[in-house]
Length: 583
Image (cartoon, rainbow, N blue to C red; front, side):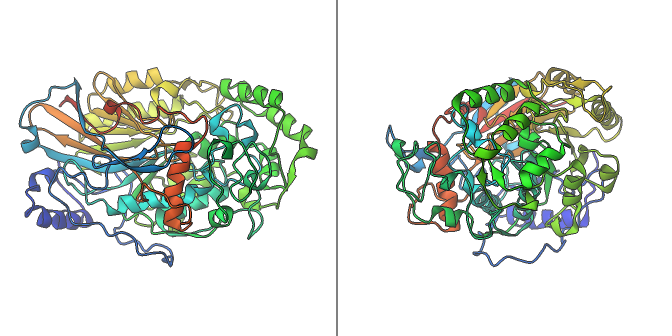
């Protein structure tokens, strides 16, 4: 295969090799390409980001270590609760060891001495940067589902910035030491399909100041100062439902939660994949209805609902019975007088597909590149949210759009995208014959929504089983990487691995480093290594600094009432070496 690289990539590689010569990991880097962009123009390595924030000095990435290494990953330790009941504090806990999985390939001895790194990168997923004061949120369904409102949500920006700090400090792939080439987000970067949340996401990733507040400029207006016992009231002595479970009173919490946060931005190039919360109001309703804009930007916010009505609404959401939100609209209208008066804010308006693309293509958002973060002007012109990019000389990346525009939070892809994917896979086999990594938001198990796309009513929609069948028919495909379920889950599919990673809003809050290597014995390995944010495991209730809030974000997520306790997955779904036959 071609070993041609761009000048920027070659420079990075020379730096890596100089360090590696002293650590014995030169062989790990051979064949690793750092050129990004694929069939699109490669990003310049020296694109100037926006004004640098007056932030605390970011953690500097150390030199590439001897490998394998563990520090800064869950191979060294994981936030672990103390105690057995009530509100439980987190502390340093035991590591998650690496598990070897050989369902798709044999584990031959000595492969660690022979392997060549082909790709090394990081996956973010389900960041859910959330405007907790947004009027379209349905927090009043909390009694029906824990995902309707979480006590940690007001700190999502601080939590994501701390995750960025962690990735900036990683010295390379934990298994190979190869330089990390990029970060891919696999959707639900925002929570409410809000222009303001999209601005927060792009600023966090590219660097700058974020004030996680909307409505009143210097005052929080949301469910946590409502006096309602359904929600944790951190600044109040009120014995709300959460305080009865041991949640603390934290004077100054809400003021701290809306204080400006400083993001250093990623030092790595990054790519974006779209999710249902990015594309659909509420994450589940078909877009385009002006009513959503009216409510989102207006001055009324519904915060409570009778239990029977809440149960009915949640049933409709869960089963996809109201994809256009007609029943939801009637509910909001009928309870308008009971809604709280809040400060209107035009920035909360839902963003369209075109606005999503334009925001990514804004030169001010380029950060470390590439320009558009996977998307191009052609994608904007053709209303397309899927693309290919070159991960290395030996690996092709494919980013899919699995959100169904017809509504509901499960996914599918349309005829047009499926035909495009088939063509890309066939052309790859005729040409470079690169290995292929596919990225999407939805998993194979959650692509069961074949509701027609309103913009393409005659186009068939295709679900997870059909996509698995297609990818299995192309031996170059080695991995399908996704999120959505908020749970770690790794599944073999005959000839490729499906790697699903937990979210960064529910506990455990994680990202995943993925390394593809050639073992030179007829097999490949995909190494997956989970990382937490840079925030300390232990919290200090008196520390409401940016770092202290990021630590509290994690601890509150662990203690969230009714939150699922199985999202970490099993040991086989966490840190793993996934073997498969080399084609």
